Image 1 (cartoon, rainbow, N blue to C red):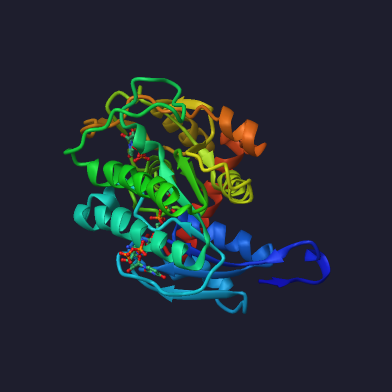
Image 2: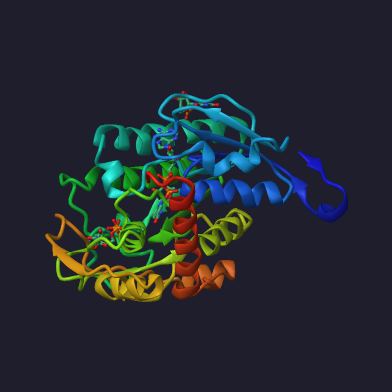
Amino acid sequence: MAILEGDFKSLVRKKILVTGGAGFIGSHLCQRLVEQGHEVVCCDNYFTGQKDHIRSLLTNPQFELLRHDITFPLYIEVDEIYNLACPASPVHYQFDPVQTTKTCVHGAINMLGLAKRVKARIFQASTSEVYGDPEVHPQREDYWGWVNPIGPRSCYDEGKRCAETLFFDYRRQHNLEIKVARIFNTYGPRMHPNDGRVVSNFIMQALYNKPITVFGKGEQTRSFCFVDDLVEGFLKFMASPPGLTGPVNLGNPVEITILELAEKIIAMTRSESRIVFKPLPRNDPRRRRPDITLAKEKLGWEPKVDLKSGLEKTIEYFKQLIQDQPSV
Ligand code: NAD
Ligand code: UDP
Ligand code: UDP
């Protein structure tokens, strides 16, 4: 570690590993950590991530890029680890479900082994999917979930649940400093335009004046958090006292039906798209909203960006993307 001068006088410069750093959330996190003066090692196998997301950091001497799959061991020296590597959208994580489970489980073991050897604090990007199709609403951290172990979403849901188990076992067995965050639906610039997630799908469809595909009747709900808010939550959680292991929910508690979201995006893009109803995918959760009392109390964190402002920024991003790469 080194002490920085100037604006960062009081900050200890750390060497920080971000796995999945070329992905949607990871690239925003890398950016923030570099801005804070840290040295960042971004590790990614580019399954869903892109070099473009971190292109502006490539010439920065504080930033280093590693092409590496975390299901294989990694021997480097770091002070902190953010473990984000894992495809997050159903289309991507169901493309190769065995690899998804491997990434969640073998990847977690390798990153925990690394953290153990170098005595690094380690953050896990867990997910609201550990609650499955919840019988309790909104979801609090002490709810154990309602998860199908053998369905098409299980590679991700059970993979992430097993990763949480490993984090807590490494804590109990090896006294590791762990931070387990359960992330709820997050959106913003650098989402993948074709990853099938609802916000990116609806915006792309609206911008191309194509039908907006609402699954089921659109009565299911989600709660959408803007990526900048989420990253702020990561940083606060990582900096919290060692006793605060989580799991901690990070998400925006404002709930909206998928049909309302479709209507909002059509209005905001002034699109000529009409809504079409498609079959609801199997095991699609009916309701999801985080209870963020714990994050508010322990981290002093809550989202600041409302859905309208966040969607404006995201729509702008996709408009620019279509202009730069008309084939997307
Ligand atoms: P993303 O797909 O954009 O990013 C994941 C990154 O991990 C990609 O860059 C991908 O190439 C990389 N990756 C995948 N497998 C890897 C492997 N084996 N080795 C190295 N790199 C690998 O997804 P995201 O939305 O940025 O999600 C980041 C993390 O946050 C994931 O762990 C995800 O489960 C979690 N999360 C995201 C959301 C959300 O709404 N976006 C919600 C809950 C949890
Ligand atoms: N590991 C790694 N980097 C390290 C240390 C360990 O990738 O710096 C991997 C290692 O390959 C091992 C896993 O992490 O399979 C778990 O390590 P741990 O020390 O917990 O278990 P063990 O090596 O005893 O199996
Ligand atoms: N969804 C939809 N149309 C789409 C994509 C998704 O109606 O084109 C629905 C999907 O069925 C789910 C919700 O939007 O109820 C959120 O889906 P997403 O894949 O973004 O996230 P997750 O299901 O993991 O919360």
